[in-house]
Structures are given as C-alpha cells and as structure tokens.
Length: 193
Image 1 (tube, rainbow, N blue to C red):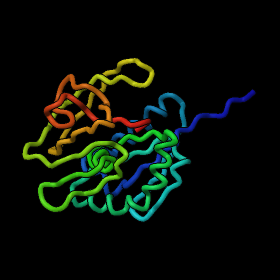
Image 2 (tube, rainbow, N blue to C red):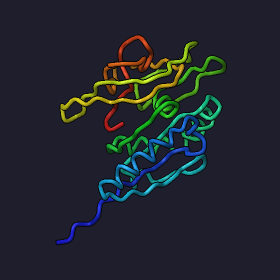
Image 3 (spheres, rainbow, N blue to C red):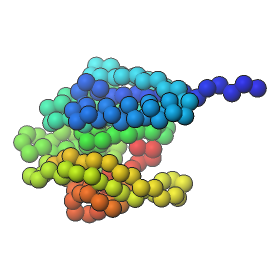
Image 4 (spheres, rainbow, N blue to C red):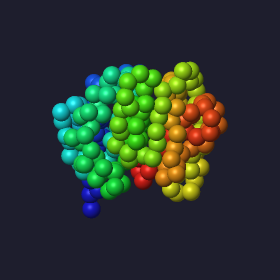
C-alpha cells in the first residue's frame, strides 16, 4: 500500500492589504517547516474581491495592517464572512495576527473615526492606545492535548485587546505586554482559531 504524500493547503487572506509589518514571514516559516519535514505545501491567496473555498484549506492566515487597510479588509470581509464562519465552525485552523486578529473580534476602535466592525468569531474588543508595545513576548499555552507549550514572538502594537467571557486566551504571559499590558493574557482562542 502506497501512502499519498501529505500537502498542507494554506489560504492566505489579504496578502497585499494585510502584510504591513513583514507578517508574510509567518507564511514563509510555515512553508519552510513543511519542506524540512517532506510535507508538501500549497498556497492560495485571496485578496479583496475574491472569495475562496475555505473548505479546501487546512490553514487560513490573516495578518496585520494600518487602520486604512484594516477598514478596507473589514468591508471586503463581509462577502467572505459566511463561508469563513462555516469553515471555522467545521474546525478550520486559523492563525490571525495584528489586524487579522482584531478583525476576528467584535470590533476595533481606532483613535479617530468610527469603530471597525469585525466578524465576532472571537469574543474580543480592541481599542487604540496611546503607547506602543514593542519588544519580545512569550506566553505559556495549553493546547487541547493538555500539554503546555511556550510561544515566543515579537509584538509591535498600540491596540489594547480585552477578551469577553466567551473567549479564552491563547496563553498567559511570561514576558511582554500581550493583549493589553494589564491582564497577563496573550491572544485569544475559539475552536481552532
């Protein structure tokens, strides 16, 4: 019996709109890690005006952007909302950072202008802050297996994200400011998001 080669199918949302801080590096890192393990990797990009078949993806990526780009993505996301929510409820894996993370929440309130509505997949709200959090961040994460892992990264944001009662943090801070510099949380989780 021959085992078919494994291929990870990645859907990269808004590659031109939401990749302001080199977040595309997350995609490159995933592709390289697959290559090291002999795992195939295919990438479908879906920018504004394109509604991909999310059921054909193993992983959906959403990255960061400024308020203007985030507003454009939020307007376009309305057309993708139904299929994206269905994929999430069917346990699609989603990695969202920066603006992508905020767009999966209920809303982001910029320092000027009206709030930018998100999908509400995550019970979280974000408000613009005066001070930027810049530096290394580390958190201890407990995944569904019950095992604990340490996640390390870099943060550069002024947004303050607060989780509602229906959200749980991705992890507890070991270093850095995390979601808001106050409650010791980093990120948010819902199903496989």
